[in-house]
Length: 72
Image 1: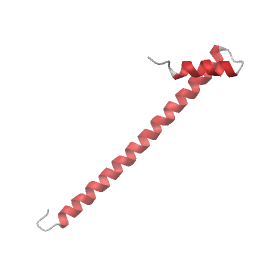
Image 2: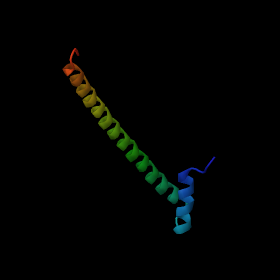
Image 3: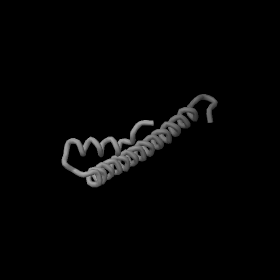
Image 4: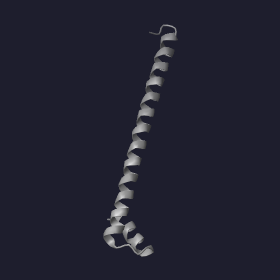
């Protein structure tokens, strides 16, 4: 199994800074959690957008079917 990004980035941050493990780890966890939250919010927005588009397409399809000869 691959190393978790928080562990990897904590170690990388410690290499390029003079932060101790606890401080570097706290910073990386905060950034990681904020990124996860932002990503989740973006997915939710996209799912709502997709659902609205599906509803619009279904209404348009129903309208077109109703206009067909013998439809409805």
